[in-house]
Length: 100
Image (cartoon, helix red, strand yellow):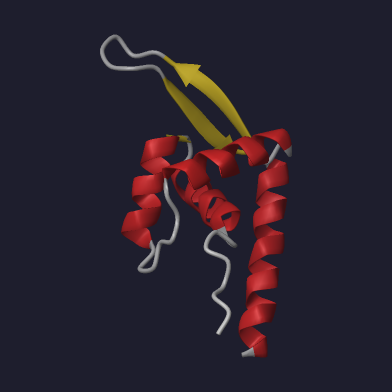
């Protein structure tokens, strides 16, 4: 039996997380996904690849923040284009679910 793609909906889940918890940095996004999704099949490299891809598509914006202590962090926020993409993902997932 063919296995489903491991990271098929990573972008959708990240956008949903950012809609509910924006802004957030990469490690916070990953830990949120792992806490909220019972079958989180994503890892750190796939989250950062997805964030980079979504930034190129202008679905998210980012800014660097350097705290007085600790490392600088790149914070991400969902954009109106990202909210539109999230809506499209939701429709696609609902249609796939209906097919079952």
